[in-house]
Length: 233
Image 1 (cartoon, rainbow, N blue to C red):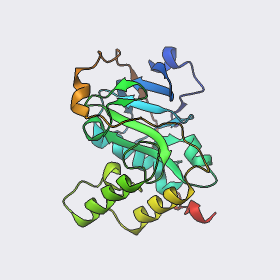
Image 2: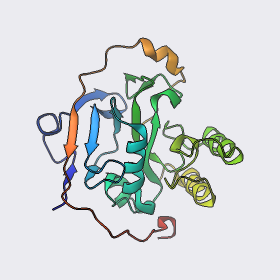
Image 3: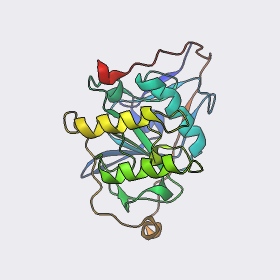
């Protein structure tokens, strides 16, 4: 039996220890450690149903990145790990769950929360939105172009690895181009406002008491779904 949890179909505070705070741009969930059995090779699935942002205050970035990549499953968003229901059901295939470290975030606040360098930010946004600001623009193209020309740059979402496969190639450029051309047709909620150095956010209010969400998986799933190029649907 495989463990699966939809974070909008349960009592968030009671079951998930998920602390939620309303912000002007939408809803943000603040979790301490999102612990899925299997770690970087997840045996369970966490599905985020809404278009909201998630802040992880005490998780390992490499593990979370692997879990999002596993859930992404070549655009199907149905794999083990972390998945987005909205991205999976989006007929345009132009949205995704992007993630980055707080230290790489360009803005001071995320859904009204003062960003800390050790946080991990997850957000439902357009494919190619490297900076997680709710729009695909010249800043995002600058990120992927720089990383493509500099092979030593880490292959992460913020640097243009939008397909979560550890490389930057034509698939990632296809993702950002489609996100750019189709943005607005499938709205996303979040726009952070004016840029503010993350360093300035280090003197912020205390982080809410982190919760821990644990999923126990009883069996690994061996089948891998065929990559669906959803732009062509």
